[in-house]
Image (cartoon, rainbow, N blue to C red; front, side):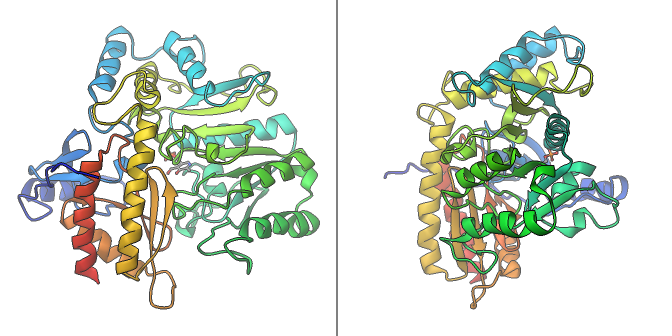
Length: 453
Ligand SMILES: Cc1ncc(COP(=O)(O)O)c(C=O)c1O
């Protein structure tokens, strides 16, 4: 593979520079104490996969605003769609009036999931958490059952229903109770850290058996469970890919008990994994899908898609003032153009999903070579540009200290990155990342790993 040279990030001042320092100080004084600030970086201008801060430092972005900026920054096709719609109208409430662009968006999203004889419908909100709330409301309303089962390590958002479902960190729940009743968690089948005394090969079956033979026999009557919600590839919990047969078997279990299966595709969906939905890597179909993040290249919009046979809630029972905003919907349609290859992005082959697969495979292969050189990289996993790299100590236990040191070393050299799980770094760059830009990122990673060895 020949790689032409791509520019390196440009760090002109020690980070944070003078302007950033000023803004960070005000930010610390004025904004909510709940915000995290993993790195002292204050963005000013974006272009493609590059972000320049207020002091003129340019960074290569391997986090895309937490897996959001699918088409990079300021993609001309997205900017044009937003401008044209903004000039027409920026808001007319979808709860009251249908809108051309939103109807088209529903059709084009649903085209990726519906099968002959199986119609689907779409509900639009503003955030991932809202899509998740809509999904659990619909599941309860449709089934007349109240229990919802989620997974340990999951992240579903910050609203009350969503934090109750979330199973990744207790800090999201501490001091906020009481939460939603009738929610339980089962382990996620993580092949690298198999739960319930299982192995990489048996972890899926172990989780299913725990659910069927323990939980349903001792704690929750299966016929009172409305839904099981799961990330087909777990994001915040560590960018984990379950064993190939797990989701189809979970589907069969749900069918046996009349339980709805909700796939939370907020982080792994929208082409990031190399397929439109991450569950499409497995032979399985859910009843409900939640989508947000990458759907509109950074404009706030989310969707809850459900089989028509499930979306039976009555008129007026659910809605949102801003949900399905027409400007955000225009950005989503333009994002789909690029994902599906109706509009081609130069240098990215036929479409962005194909690019995600190609560049993701390249990155994973290179990271696996690095793992052979640096034993503290315990696992490299993922699909497409949804990649997790787990740091371990000499005993193979999670090593968050080394992970944090590596993450800072990458940042200091100009690579924006983000942690996930107990000791992993997630690579979730814009899907327009080229092989050349990936190579630049890898050069920085190599330097950073050498610095923390
Ligand atoms: C899988 C998943 N679901 C839901 C959410 C919540 O999305 P939002 O922050 O837009 O509410 C997230 C956010 O990280 C997520 O990763």
